[in-house]
Image 1 (cartoon, one colour):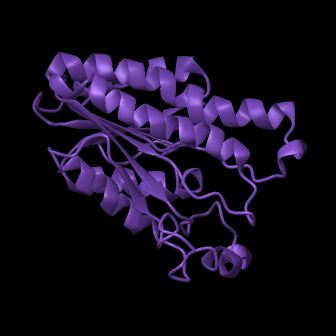
Image 2: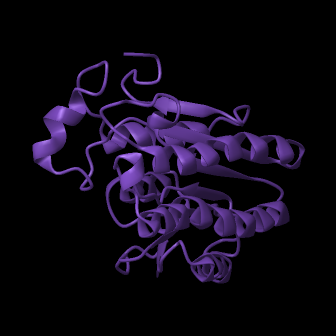
Length: 237
């Protein structure tokens, strides 16, 4: 067992890309981490507990938070990183696309955040970080993305609502709004086109987003903030 005063972060969508980077970032800060995704493998690090499951299933959220409390005794931070992105013309989205995107991006956020906040209230405070997308603020004709805007836009609004609802109870809620980041989600051959979507003319790195999350973690006066890490996308084109 760990010392009861060690802080604990829960990270969803944690098996690769941004999620794996965020897990590593919190370990460097000295946090224990509970990492979840559908395919996540057991960790060799005693400070990382992995829980497999589909975050769209509220039962996964229950198992993840229960595991955090059983193993580490508390929950201090939740990073809602799990997300899926399906770019299609609006009328091409199928009922299955809709169910998948809503399931991960909204339902996945909802239950685990409720359960995490209950634990944060028990320790007198905490921090929630939601990972959204810059397309919420700046739609782009080259990237049809209504389902991303519908779900991640909801998450961005919820970020502010939660920040205000819990502002006097020590729980901060912030969001990081990335541009397109080099992760396994984007095959190498798409990189040139994706780079061109950003005013700075390149894609971001996972470390850019990890650094933003950790900045927010260490910013006690910042809540309700949507931090754009997007190579200028949110400023204009």
